[in-house]
Image (cartoon, rainbow, N blue to C red; front, side, top):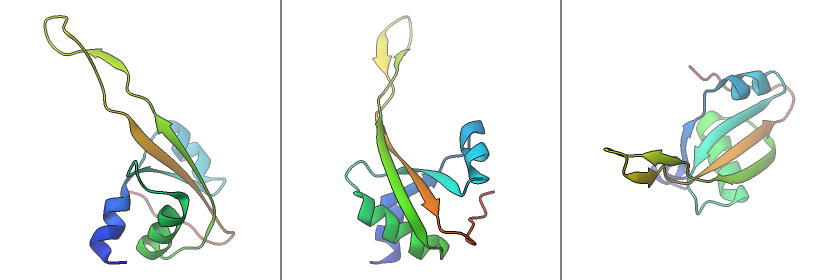
Length: 95
């Protein structure tokens, strides 16, 4: 896989209170491409961060309703979230 295709699979790490709490358990959250499967996500994380992945869990996060302007209804985009569990002894530095 080319480096650019790796970054098209893994868009960005998620930095939230819940994801920071899970880092102590070796779990890291990422925003990934909606069409990416668990095998592609595993390979991309292992090559980008040079770690060994134990498990990958994915979920589609549905868009939420929002007001756009002047009370016009709209919604945020749906996206895919991956929670990656690393093998013992590996960690990712997310800043």
